[in-house]
Length: 216
Image (cartoon, rainbow, N blue to C red):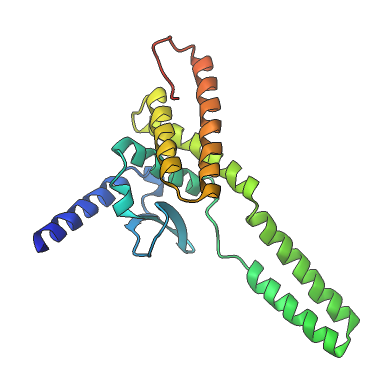
């Protein structure tokens, strides 16, 4: 048992080192890659851990079930999100909303109309910001844009364009099959459809020969 655990730990560390080497040089000083210790975590996610530090967290048990090329493209998707500056940030909105609601209730009690309007205004601004931040369509568009950039990153690391599309398409299909959430499956399916459209456009631009396949 100890030998198996040691071997497993070495394999995990080796995979994390491999992924760190897939970071573009300009990100290597401030982006880290770690295995997550959360219970039932997402396969891969990215978080801000400081003002100038970002961490990519991976569920290494689920990760190990994917092919290497699938892992690479999903990893570069997260890298693309970092480059596009679409990583969720701990904002002021929730705190402002709480303050505004508390203030509104307090001003109703003391009946100060001006302060009540200010408190309600604060609630409105922070509530709108939260709505925009959590808007599903906006998040989907950001994910599609990150997929496009992941393809470009793959070509920087010597993938051919057709193989980059095929690898990401295969990864998204696997995520669709494995996801227990209908809502999450729908997001992956939307990304896959967008990827197919992008692959068709790339194929037309490069006038690929009939034998070159850009993905299904």
